[in-house]
Image (cartoon, rainbow, N blue to C red):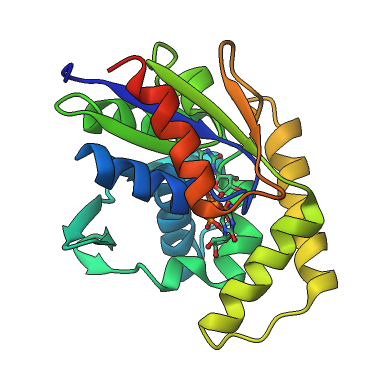
Length: 223
Ligand code: CDP
Ligand code: CDP
């Protein structure tokens, strides 16, 4: 097994990135890094501190005095914001609505990318997000671009919310996901795109295990 082997998984909201990335990381004993959780964490802190999501400099200042860590407990990964467990809180409606505005800012992204590269230094990693194959780890051994129809992605989120006891509305979910995809794809600073050399997998009619197996097979050829 090569040291520092990297698997980059990008794609639009609710395509299954984190679910599949976790399975792949576990199988290979790699570190899983959820970069979306980092943007969500700073968004949560900004909202709590009354900082406007359009104020790039204020957000950067806030980020510079913010610690974001991942804590692995058995097979569960916790997100710590200044040592507080915010794993659930960063998935709230309010954070989900605002996060793409925070993630638009080049200065915020630059700091996040530096932290993400640092985390990827010591061990094999599976990292998921929007700009991993294009910006964060452009020389990753494996680059995956996961897609699925917006209806299927909304359905997945709907089912997930139901399992968690959170009521949601399909039409609302479709709108929210489509809007976030649009902001993420149209922004100037490292937009969501399929990176050079990325393998696209349309997961619309695939199970989680099928997607994970496909990625593991691609990775094993390089390991
Ligand atoms: O899980 P979900 O697809 O809902 O989103 P996420 O991966 O948690 O990411 C939340 C948001 O963070 C995205 O909609 C992007 O605006 C931003 N993000 C980003 O800009 N770059 C990344 N590498 C990861 C997330
Ligand atoms: O990380 P990302 O936002 O791309 O998606 P996710 O949070 O991993 O997946 C969204 C939901 O879709 C989760 O509840 C997964 O269990 C589900 N899923 C699925 O039903 N079928 C797949 N092939 C992949 C994910």
